[in-house]
Image 1 (cartoon, helix red, strand yellow):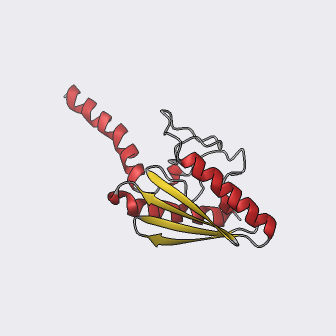
Image 2 (cartoon, one colour):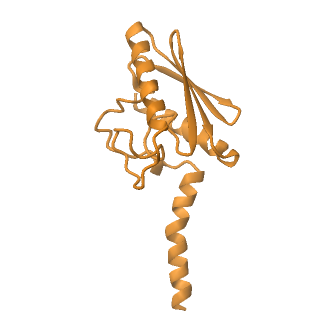
Length: 155
C-alpha cells in the first residue's frame, strides 16, 4: 500500500508541471513586476499589440503612436530577441532581467520552447514566435493571447 501511495503522490507533484507547460494557466503569469516589464514592447506607453496566427506560432505586431514610442518598442523587441536566444537556466526564476526562460511572466511573445524573430516596422515592430514542436503550437498561441489579455486588463 505504501508504494502505491508514494507513486500517487509523486505523480501528483509531476502532473501540474506537465499540464502547465501544455495549457495556459495563471501560474505562468507570475512575478512581482519590480521592473514594470521594462523589456516588454507591449507595455510601452501608447503601444498597441495585435496577434495573428502564423504557420507554427504567432505574429505580434506592436505599434506606437509617436516616434519615441516606436523607438522604444523596437529597442525592447531587440532586447527580447537577445534574451530569447540565451540558453535556458537550470532554475526557473522570473526577475524581469531576462531570467525564467520564457515560461514565466506576462509579456506576450516570450515563450519557452520557441524561436523568435523581430522585424522593425515604420511604426513599431513585428515579432514572430514559432514553437519548436508542432504539438506546442496551440498552447503557445493561447498563452500569448492570455498574456496580452492580462496586460490589456491592467491598463
